[in-house]
Image (cartoon, rainbow, N blue to C red; front, side, top):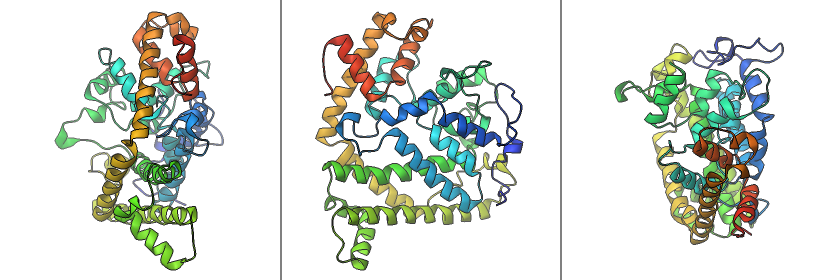
Length: 380
């Protein structure tokens, strides 16, 4: 299948930070994907969690399964829109590499610990992982990914950190966050797609995990139009269907509808804008979009999940414990760097080294380290 004119062509990539010969059998973006899959940080995602902590159950989503779901959704949409599937997949598989243990609870705690030392942003940390922290190659630190993959990984970035990136890499991945508001630049369509596929995936699987955990019920979800419409449709067509099959079929239909909506809405936006090439996309408003109606329905679902799942008393209780683990680990390593691995202990910027070390931990390793260093067992 030929790529659309506005898709990213690996033959026209802006290249890598360290020049390398082309691979004989793979495009630049296929090579990026392969490097990500073989990285240490990618393997750790299997023991990093989304909403539920690792010890709370074997069937809840982890960062790894989430990333695979984002990649699958992204590739399906990219194929229909004639975008570069390999680039979408590479961004999707790498987008959570910088996430801390214990999901957003860990991220918020680490950001607070680093408030006076540059803060902590998980998107920027994902970029640090692929640019610096992975140690696999003799010629350079990091994975030396192409510009287009790195651009997609850096979904959000504060102005302060964008300025630091721009100083180190003029015209690089930080530049678009520094443009004046009226001329704000977008990333590639493939990056925009990975971002939207992330949203579609976590909304759907948080429903599944939330019901599985017992923290939310199908009856509660009746207030969410995007869910309830497809549940009723499912029961109308399959009146004898019971239990989790109703939930699974409802979520399947909901996912499909969102995918078809993105394809149709984006197709219309591209037809109207007619960007000449991939670079022209960067000077347009976002073109990879939901329809207005689907955007409102998705926002309603997000509000429901925030109110009923993410702020549920049981989740909040675990959040408090997880944040205590991160804070006390940070203090312990700061006071005694030799408790970290030697490569981190030797870094001159002690605060950033501690943040890098903690961010790279899995849930269970962080819990074990906390118990070893403090004698407390907060997360059984």
